[in-house]
Length: 250
Image (tube, rainbow, N blue to C red; front, side, top):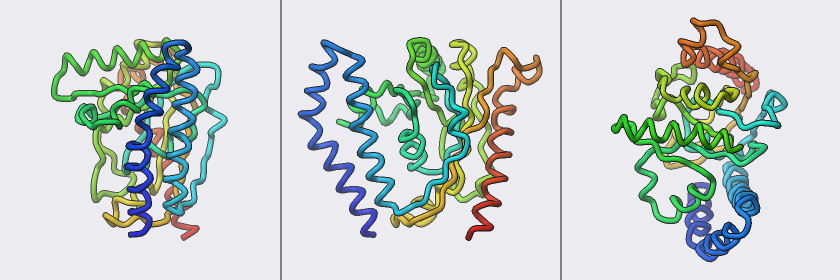
């Protein structure tokens, strides 16, 4: 319970105390949007790293060298925990926006920081608005900002790590419309930090693996048509391998 309370203090304290920082960042952005983006990224990364440290978890990262450094990418990841966002965000080599649920747009201060970091809000109930968000994400990539999305749309609960919900095909339009590489991410054992024993936060051994970049235009017709299943199968294979590693080390 101490870890949970500490995390609450850090997150709420940051959001409240960051009001003057948001104002300063807004002023900086008027003169240098790039400097504002860099500054905002460093601030949020520091808070995220502290939150991860509080959990006491061990994080093993595999394949980080596979992530292209010279271009913006679309990250596609499985989703089992609130900590998936923190664990992936602290590794990004450039400014990266996340596709978040539309409901998060109404959370004060958090919404402001998410907008600072080029996050977009997806309303899955409104097809027209959803497509606008997808097109905005593709435009962000063309402007040099990477995008991360969890194409399951929500976190599956009380199921084994290898069981994922179907990936939404619309998520992959971000890559095909921006002509960017897709970087698959397999997040293994992240629910053991928090979701498996709410409200307690416990140390866990987490494995985060980056797959080889997928270039949609280099796939054959069938693979490109089923890009959602193709990517999900790659993630599933990484999860299988890493789940065995965790089981052996337990």
